[in-house]
Length: 358
Image 1: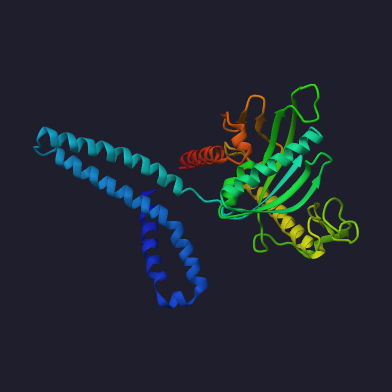
Image 2: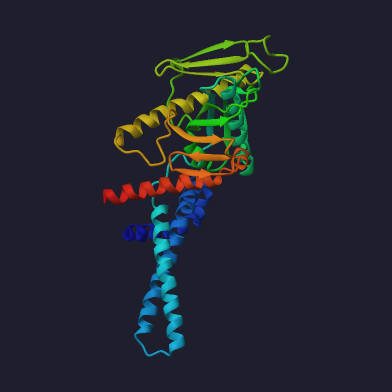
């Protein structure tokens, strides 16, 4: 690991010279690329230098303890030695995490799809509650939410809803949310006060661009139809809604949220790119690691990942056995504690895999 860190530091210093070179600065595309690489390396190099300084302090303290010292000063040196030894172990773990291969999609925007599952109207109402939870989380992080398409139920829930969250690192935080979310509560439609269980399925897809995946538009069938539901004067009077079918994969995407057919086509194409990219990415991951699954889970939409129990005021994430008794705060978008725990578990699993492979 430390040979690799020396190489990284040398490259980092070389990059520092390059980004200050007038010839490179004049080529903005190249300069931005080098700046991105430089900024990605900065946390690793800073931690490595901090680690190296702590190791040097340990060596100095050990040498001092071999000399004749008065009792009071000797105790101070011992305290400093103990602190630096602890610091070295902490920094070593932090550096190991920083060196883990990064998910190339982590900095991307995300497309989130929520569908009401088992439970009829109650499942649709829960899907709407989940949408509001993610929208509030995005608001807390100053990210932007754009609804792409939705299908409302009679009681105001969502049978399904697709929306994009735009913000730096959106996928890195939300990628663990894919799966089945289960709710236990007394529905508004229940007069007897009985607790019902229903569920909604969440899919989180990194936004994909043409450089990420190739789609031949000759393989895409585009149908237009009249939109239904709320949407203003154009609804039911013009063929503004769009349905795209990717013939090779059978993926179907519909969008009717915008009044303009052109805008609905743009939105539908974004979702289509994301779904095809996700299908190809998942097939690739399974081909190279079919017998390995991260402890946090594979993001399989059929996997039950979390239960929201309203009568008991608790939320349980089944993948890591985490239970928090603050359901109101979580439903209001306070998701960082859950997401931090999931990210940490995922990192530890990858560290163990790396250690086993060495």
